[in-house]
Amino acid sequence: MKICFIGLGSIGTRHLHNLVQILSERKILSEIHALRTTHRPLSDDIRKIIDKEFTSYENLDDDYDIVFITNPTNKHYETLNKILSHTNHIFIEKPLFMDTKNDLKSLLLNTDSVYYVAAPLRYNGVFPILQDFVKKNKVYSARAICSSYLPEWRKNIDYKVNYSAHKEMGGGVSLDLIHEWDYLKYLFGMPNKLSYLKGTKSELKIDSDDIAVYIAEYSDKIVELHLDYFGRRTTRQLELFTKDGLLKVDFFSQTVSFDNGIEIIPYPVTKADDPYIAEMNYFLDLCTGKETRNQNDIYNAFDTLKLALGELE
Image: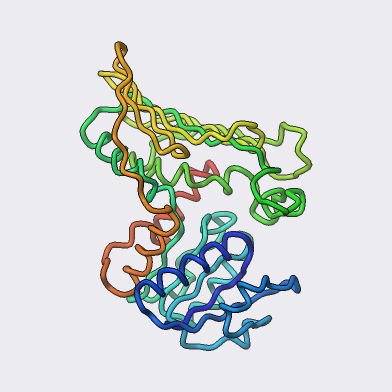
């Protein structure tokens, strides 16, 4: 496989390492290129993996099997337009774009190509249990939260200079934590009505939103979602309220329990692979034809983006 990475920050580097590991396990030979717009030197372990490095789109080859778009969100649309003719398949880091002003119809997409947008929470070990529960139980309401402390997200990186801190780069919890809307929409579909509040309320030295709160109304349920950058205890949970009790899902500890009002019953969770590894395997299966259903194509990811930005039509 001939592969190119556009951007090699923290998430791009993670995907690169995972990809190389999986290609080795599958005994697939590869040639890996990278397009970088920064002069920051690559670490020795990354430099050994990269066969060619470019600084301009004009110098890219035209025959890539896969291109990974892992640069800042505000560059995704421009990057996608520039590399569509250079590759068969594309992996796009979430979120798809910075806003919904970009017209999908203007993109010259190939119907035979895979355009996949990252959605790693779907590969968490608790997710199969969650899916099965929603199919078998009537959910009256759901309450989801993702709360963590931005300065501790990335080791040895000043949070104030990272894209998350800057609105113009696509930072802010509404976009950064779009994982929540991805899985909620996957479970429940698009809501009929959406209320959305966001702001910068903490002492963090950022200009992006550090809190966002949503209330979504469906015909048969209400869904609440809280996102923030300032929670000192990392929390990523979902609660489902039903006739028979409360299902509580913890994505970090990968635990699921059901409270029927009398006792709390734990669900046995099979510890899954690293979600990023599982997702990369799925993407490669899509590219090689072993999987035929793209669960998060560009159009689906665009609808998720609308929800994250509070732009329900």
